[in-house]
Image (cartoon, rainbow, N blue to C red; front, side):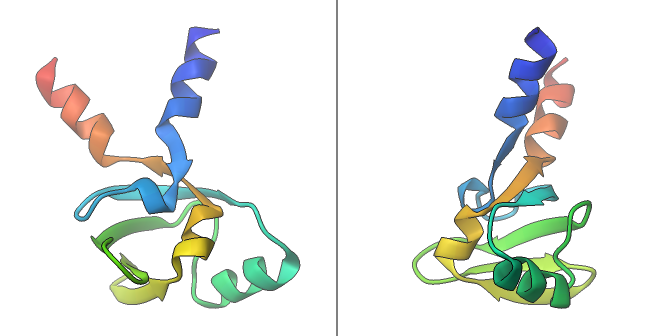
Length: 93
């Protein structure tokens, strides 16, 4: 049971990642239009992303060497598994 709780903490909306943090896309909670639009930009489950900018306006992320602007509303619908925090936890052990 503890494992499931930890997993739910690690999977968060993309909008909650801070600048410089990395994550892997877990899922997208949206309609076919949003999912298709994100897929056309290469944003699908399993893709590694890094947040470059997360202040007013769209989020700027990088995936596969390409910078992409994502609206704040769309970024709330993209669930990611945070990678940066996992590294920080490992460093303190």
